[in-house]
Amino acid sequence: MARRPRRPAGARGRRGRRLPWCSLLTGLALAAGLALAGLGAWLARGWLTDPATLPIRRVVLQGTGPRLSASELRRQMAPVLARANFLTLDVDALRRILETSPWVGAVNIRRQWPDTLVIALQQRQAVARWGRRALVSRSGVLMQVGDNRGFDRLPLLQGPEDMRELVLRRYATYARQVRGLGHYILRFGMDRRHAVHFVLENGVEVRLGRRDHAARMARLVHIFPRLVADGGRPIRYIDLRYDNGLAVARAPAPAQDS
Image 1 (cartoon, rainbow, N blue to C red):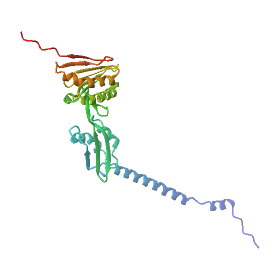
Image 2: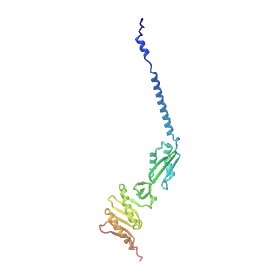
Image 3: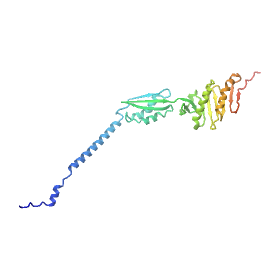
Image 4: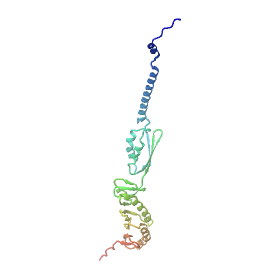
């Protein structure tokens, strides 16, 4: 039997090698898919961050009053609200703006689907003046109001800035005791050595000194009603800076007509 001629080795190798069209098409499809996904994400992000998408149509302010004007607060918030929508609103930035008011103690912000923002404000209560340009809240926070002359009904506290909380605590303690006597403190001061003095609404100055404040206040509470009941000349000051006693100065006697 005649033998079939052998095929050249080179020809056999060329026929067995195939171009990877399938892998190439798969790669192109994958790349196109990723590009479309990226484009879609970019378009979606632009749509979601557009202030016209899901806009905030209603802002409910709770806790406003004479010291917290709703119209003024809305004016301050307007720039932040104008560049955001319901989803992208920077709540922390909005809170920082509201907390710039010395009358705002706490801010709670919550979203209410689909287009409402509810803002609850806790207003600080001023209990005293500090110097000429600030107030002190009930919790001891210094409120920089710029000018406190419109709050003359509040007692005036004075002392070192870094001792403000201590001054407020001492004032609160002694004010309660003085109210029990039917009076109230008009001015209260403490220096860096803790020397305390205060003036009552009737003009009587009380000097407690630097130490034994509790014992000296107890002495004042005990003796004050009797001093007032004497019916003598008005009291100018009561000096309690003694270990076992006190000194009382009264107004001078009126001059007698000759």
